[in-house]
Amino acid sequence: MLAGRVNPGKAPIKLSGKEISEEKVLGAICYLWLVGLIMLFVKRDNDFVLFHAKQATVLFGISIVGWLIGHVPGIFWIGKLILLGVLVACVVGFIKAITGESLKIPVIGDWAERIKVAKEEKK
Image (cartoon, rainbow, N blue to C red):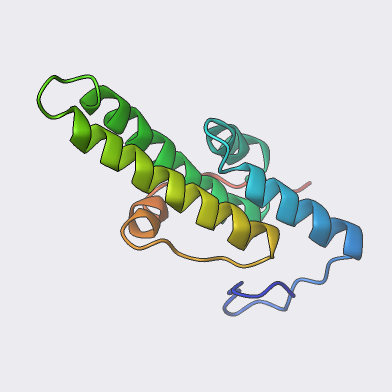
């Protein structure tokens, strides 16, 4: 079982070595700019990947705001600081995901939890 994964009231998820490896890689690549938003729809049945995709999507939105502020004369430095913070959060999220951990980034994680994604119905 991957560290940091919480699955209250349900039996532990057992994965083969290949699935664990694939899950970690998909969770990590979510932090590569727009990929997290795509993963929200593609891997919505995987709790680990979905956790990281939600956080990465929030970071993507914040990066757009930072980019826009970075083009405003006089306060451009605020946008640059925002982008630097997003970069650091993405690197930390990437490292945590690739090692199989689910780190809830302060504030970002709270916003990410508000994202609701409908799970696929299994037939």
